[in-house]
Image (cartoon, rainbow, N blue to C red; front, side):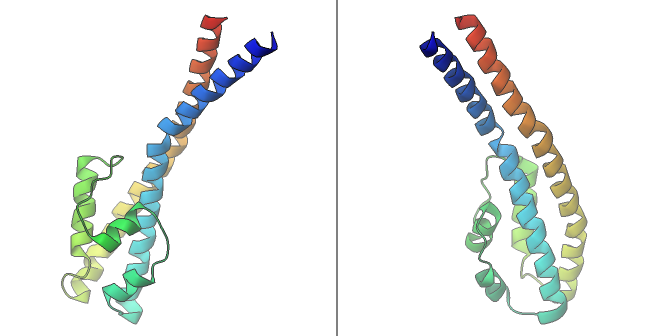
Length: 150
């Protein structure tokens, strides 16, 4: 009897864990856009006030995450949780860093500030909605599986 209850609890916990893992892409996407938005703000401040070089600014960044890794390596964007259009937009963003004079960069990155703010808010909402949904679906799948076994 106790073994059966323990097995049922383990099945439900495992399915809930699988739901949590399935929601991981939404959490990663939210973190990516939060990092991109924060860096954009920092870069706009650099362009307006201190005007240090891009290498100094990137070298100063001590945070970790997918966006900062892309920023330091400046390679092709191949993150699985971004759509093809988002990958293209991110590649364009990285390509524009340090290209041109400060006036044109201020204009470009100020325009990107609004778009990134919208993407950040959208990804936060999606992570909140779908993250909880996947965990609940995992829990329900585990309960259904337990009912079928018992």
